[in-house]
Image: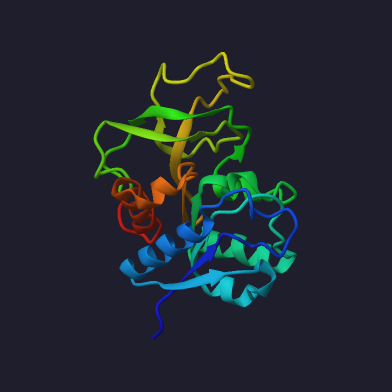
Length: 232
């Protein structure tokens, strides 16, 4: 029997509002995700154009890895296959970085990813507070993880989201343009269940160095492990 697929949706450049030119790291991310798929006994399926993915393939299950931005052109049939697949437990979602800044016209998408992107006033080096060291995505980290990245603001964070990482207190310059403290604070990574399915999201991964850093790749690998059902 063929291994389950890991659909890798990154640079879907055929559509005009996609991430081409915004995140130069996308090809590197796709390679890394393919390698993580192999370690998890999954079949890496690189998605070059979202319209080419058959809804039946999504409905059949596996993992949907999303590093997208803008109005990703999922059809209504694809959206239904993704939503139903996650809720039934056949399909899991691994969201990376800008995936929360996508599909604003798809109402359910924010809930499927856990929150909506709401700006990023900061790009800097900061301390990350590891809130849950028992999770597969964080158990290799210490209590504090020093990191360099964009820091996203979020709105509509799901109340059932299990926040795994957040910016440590006092790390951000609140005088920069657009700086504010949203009601949800500064979460960086979370996970949750949607029906019978599992979703993991990390906002980290903007720069090429992330995709060459064992701690970050271990973070993603652990997230993939968790969405596949290993661990609580």
